[in-house]
Length: 92
Image (tube, rainbow, N blue to C red; front, side):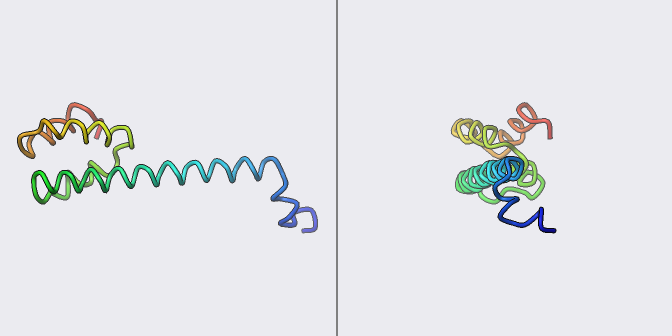
C-alpha cells in the first residue's frame, strides 16, 4: 500500500499519460456534444421538430461530420434532404 500512495502514483509517467489521455477524450467528447447541440438547433429552426430516429443518428456523428452537416444544411430544401445526406455521408 505504501508503494501505491496517491502522491507517488501522481508523479509516475504512466499515471500522467493515462490522465492526459482521459482529458483529451473528455475534451473531444465535449466538442462533439456542443457540435451536436448546435446542429440540432439549426435543424429545428430550419425544419421544426426532427424525428427521434434521425436525432439518434445525428448524436453518433463525429464533430467533423456534424460540421460538414452544418454547412450542407444551408442547401437543404426539406427534411428529406437531411435523411439523404445521412445516407450518403455516414455509416449509420
